[in-house]
Image 1 (spheres, one colour):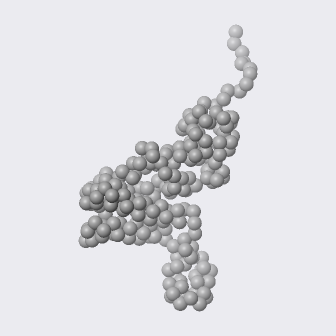
Image 2 (image 1 turned 90 degrees about the vertical axis):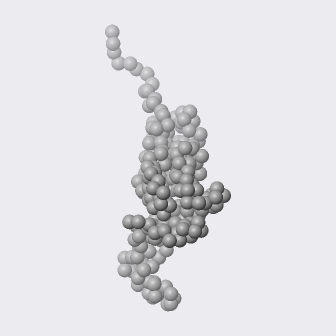
Image 3 (image 1 turned 180 degrees about the vertical axis):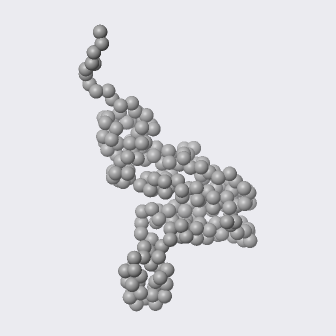
Length: 222
């Protein structure tokens, strides 16, 4: 004889993947600041204590999200052209960050020792070593490139660019500032093309790297 089974409702099956998905839901709704064991557990309909079987507290949640996002990063195959390869890696990294704007700061700021976190680091170091950098030099150059890339992406994603976002009013305010250099450059200060700024910043950083490695003549192919 069969019938309706009564008792406590079944606890949803938990996995690292379901927890990451719930964490992303919280981030979409409340931002990274809203992430916590209780908020994620609430999204899953479970007791917060049950999450500890899969992640190690809030930091574990944030690392898991960053690792999943970085795990989807498709690194381009190296061509042997250092300028092209570094630019391609930066572009792939940016595309992955922009795919989840709310969670992007995690990808850009969490220091991960997992395979997902180290893969882009290894890709950049491989290009630098192949271009003639010593191991120590390659690390210094890597850190410079990462600082530049992370800074420009954080500005693009979460902060207003310096004086940018022209709606006409901003330009007029700059022109009325009375500061000679600001007045002269007001039309350009008031405008902000995210794609153009990214290209300019990354190209400048890569040029600095190639200059240091004695490859000044290189230019990125379109």
